[in-house]
Image 1 (cartoon, rainbow, N blue to C red):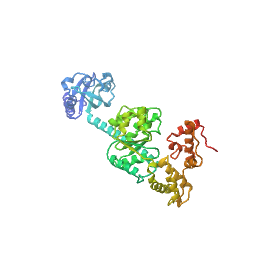
Image 2: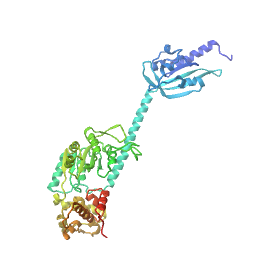
Image 3: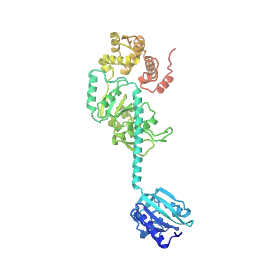
Image 4: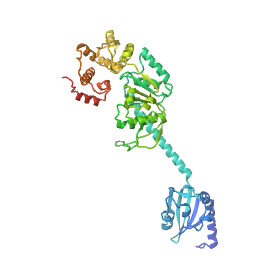
Length: 482
């Protein structure tokens, strides 16, 4: 058998390989050592739109690989294909594009392999394929993974919020009472709950405004979605926007990771803005936009988020006076108060006192591990003659203090301390506003055994942040007597 092939055998072998290359589905280019095109198969013509006669004998790079996807130049010297011709090292590329004859482009994956004869590089073969479908699938997968990650973040945030809600102690599990004033409130709830109208609940501290908000949500079509609460007065002005709308990682000092705001958590449900009158004016503008257009941007982001949220707001302040004084936007006020509800004070529904006391006592039996059967008639009569400036919250605190030190089966409750002081030693006329303020703070502190912060503290009864109350005490030289 001869060691070398005849010209006829070489020609037959070349034709056989060319037939194979002509029939495969991938595009194939053959190049000589100068980078000129020597071979183009039909698949390459179909994918690029460049017929073989346009490319043979020419540098193919100038036709389909001349610029990057952003339009920037792509010199031949930087091309992996031509580097293979120079150094003989094969290369696999899957992050570039080829340009078609019609000016469009497509993502491509290709392999360049050097042709070597007698230890000399005489050209290269490029096998490539259109990976548009794969890229589209990758983009869809990335989008799906991104959506899953967003849903995961939202679920985690909702779980954290719901855990906080579970830990938080509420005054009641339902609205208690049968007075005419309360029946009017229940009628209003019945009318507004099935709608998506914004509700503004106004009333003194301790009257149960949050309970009204929860009743509206529970009777609405959004009851299967969360009721998300934010106390606008308990957050520093610089962080209110972040709490409401969320922020991106690095949006400000301390923003170590992206955080979803309360609006995103409440999507499809209800957002309860407690103490809405405390919102800064710049945040009021952004809140108005959400109410009008249903969209917002997280802090540090230019991406617009769409939300479907019902707003229930509450305040113990006179909103109309705030509007007149310019501390609350007129347009936002009318957006929030589509359906206003005025919650009566405990004094205005004093006939509900026996039912309220019975309900609170049953809850105290569970939380304190006591077994009170009822409150004594004398105690109930004393409580009925008290004016209850702290409303239901003060009633609950009064009963809890008595239950802690009392002994079942009947609960004995003395009149609140502030009333006893007024009966025993009437306060002499005060000559200045500062003296009146000082005495009012002392009376409140005495009624809660000088507890300043927390749910049963003087700060909450006075509707002041604890830090502000301490500052006023220092300024007015208020100290607890030994």
